[in-house]
Figure 1 (spheres, one colour):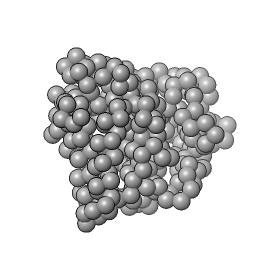
Figure 2: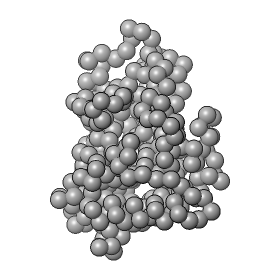
Figure 3: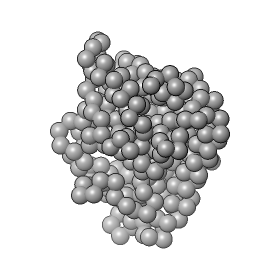
Figure 4: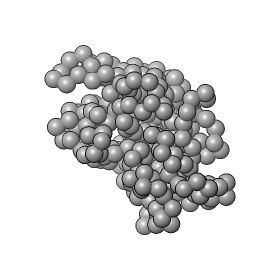
Length: 270
């Protein structure tokens, strides 16, 4: 079974959904705890939320395997994304709720971690880099959009409730000021009006993970943005059920954000 699916588009936009996978290989599933088998920290249904992206001409890459196998948005050398804060590793051993994924003493050791990095982490990143290189041959500027979601309340990582839309640009380093300003404008307009108002923050608790920080190099023509979406905006956080009545307006906002990325990449915005 392929480790990931890659759809090659024609537009200067690549959508990466690195935590969309829900499957554990049989050998890992056999060792996993009941909590681990539920893979509760999946970015549930983001593939469905972003299903329209192909219609925009975007390339889309999604993994088959769960983040519990290897977290595709973590530094391969184990460097911290947020020094001083709690975060999970390249190969997680606990859930976001602090539950163990493996029995005591059966956690992956350094050798297994290195093997998983080679088997699961590296192929996704090779494909991601190759696709960006292919796109750059066709377009002077491209945007990498890293789509995520998380429960609105995760005490391990942050206090209180997360804003609905959390845009991360590595503090402005992974994309141009123009793109960040245009995306912020979309969120500001959506937060201020409409039937469903959404809260938002730019470079708040989530500033972008490894993918955004590593690939976002505006000076080379590759801009990268991460969106961390509070799951309460489109699903039931307890049952993991997708709620179309919530999801549809959220998709509308995401569409505007991606269309803005395309406009900036093609020179439609200053």
